[in-house]
Length: 222
Image (cartoon, rainbow, N blue to C red; front, side):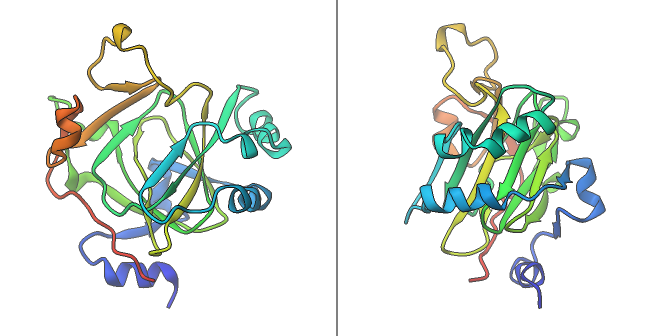
């Protein structure tokens, strides 16, 4: 039994497909590159914490790699891309975000992404979580997630945690000047976020309660 088959067996509540499946093409694409050097660097420089999750918009160890600069040329049309990392422990959707640029993800470990489209939002800007789809990103694969795809922190496949390289236009997800904030959905530069209505802490801190229905949780297989 493959890891995806094991994952689906313990998560009958939601269909999980591989990013290699044609159904992923509406959300992004698999990039035909070998990011092994980048994965090796991440494993050396950023071990997975015992608890919680972390995100760094630009992690120097990978952001300054010649391979990252190569990707800027070949994948980003010579734009200045930042190469950061999201890693730790997470298993529940909780919120979804989007940017005005595409996002590159490299599976340093196996992980699951919970995704939707901006076109799935209703007239009030809210999302029925029944429209959320789950995709398995195996270790060693790189994907490009389109700018109109809603996404958030990956879910771990193993209890040991997850690790995911995140490539975005430089400055994305960095601190915003609160005095210049005009849109209540903007929580960082180039980041629009809606929280699940059950996430009272996020809502109390000003996040829009824009997701209703099941707050999806992915169970680990090992």
